[in-house]
Image (tube, rainbow, N blue to C red):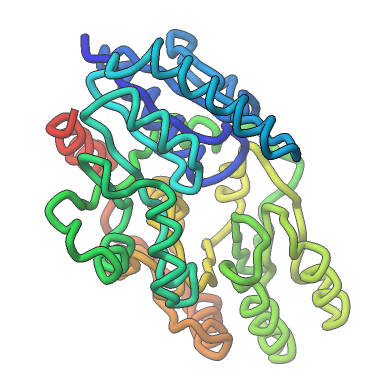
Amino acid sequence: MKKLLFAAYSLDLGGIETALVTLVNQLKEKNYDITVVLEKKQGIFLGELNPNITIIEYTPDDSKNIIRRKYKNLIKRIKFILKYKNKFDFAASFATYSNSSSFVARMASKNNCLWGHADYLTLFDNKKEEVKKFFEEKKCHQFKNIIFVSKEGKESFLKVFPELEAKTMVCNNLINDSKIKKMAEEPIELKKDEEKFTFINVGRHDEKQKKLTRIIEAAKQLKQENKAFKILLIGDGQDSKMYQELVKKEKLEDTIFFLGKKQNPYPYFKIADGVILSSDYEGYPVVFLESFILNRPILTTKVSDYQEVEQGYGLVSEKTKEDIYQKMKQIIENGFEIKEKFDSQKYNQEIIEKLEKIF
């Protein structure tokens, strides 16, 4: 039985965490011996891990006393190396931003991998030196393989590190379709509005990336034209208050509704007519797969892998409030019919086969 290790920060709500839990649970079903190492053994997804998966906590000291911090972290590293060095057949640093996850993965196996979840050039405003510094801190040259969850992520990385092309590849996130469909059936108090086209947006409230102001501005224009629609926003974040104030300022409280963070957003997909994404950038958007599985058309900006949406699953917009307004208007007036059902089993099998070659 192959022993696999995945290192991350925590299992709190988020796209990386969702992808990790789905991945390790499905691999455990295929009889792999799985260990998950976390900086913080916390998060609402902890209870969703297969109980036969081993969890280890490796938390770097963050003392303000530099000498004490360096000494304690040196001892921690030595202890980890003595206990786990090359004890695994494969190890992955799954939370790209975590320096300790990079250390854990590189020590645990010679067959190691750094996982990338975003288009980092866009994330760092096309500042190559900042991308270079970020990945060099993660010791990217020391990994055997580097996996990106989207084509755009890989391509932007190679603009900064062309010498690493031979070890860099694309592997999308797995999806648990049966779990999503089951969770979507859980009862909620909110009912479907048959009189209005209902959009749903699920994600962190972070204007730099998610650009929800585009949706709010488009909604203002559509309301002025007396279009029958509403928007459900699921999630929270640093810019939630700013969005709420903007909605109040534009008198859109009867059109845009803030539902907060939901551990299970899927029943809300069921009462929506369509999903909307207004981001400037994403890794591979998990919401694409969720929309495909729940048979809801998606209106998305041109983020990573948007071409998949163009295969009959929705509409694609430029990254402007004007084009989002036009596409929202189009789908409100005409609807959108998904003609071909998404084959999640085929999608997952192709990913598993790719990963098994790496293991």
